Image 1 (cartoon, rainbow, N blue to C red):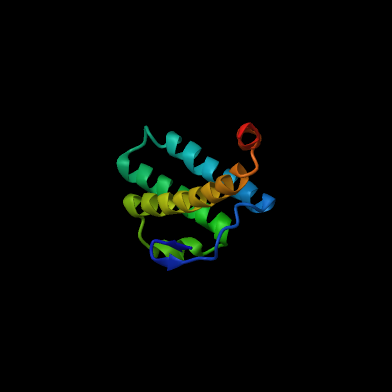
Image 2 (cartoon, helix red, strand yellow):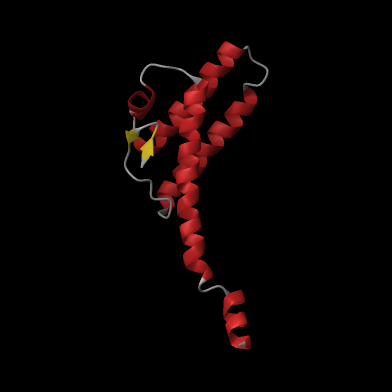
Length: 114
């Protein structure tokens, strides 16, 4: 997978330990961002970027933030990278839904009516 133009190992969201780590990392980013709403802009940007940095380090190993972002602390770059991560996992989930829908009870019932 590519994030901000940097090639990272694929994230297997169908593996229980990985998805547990992913869910925890996402939750930290979302909840942490809410806590920065009342801070000065410069402080909020640093805090939100650090949340995203920690997310990538949690999922792909220490130092991943430096590979993806270098030494910049740019909120837009961080949010775009985070969005790429979420979109990547969303595509994997769609693939699973497409596969499992073949075997859903509703589909079986519809086929029976034919």
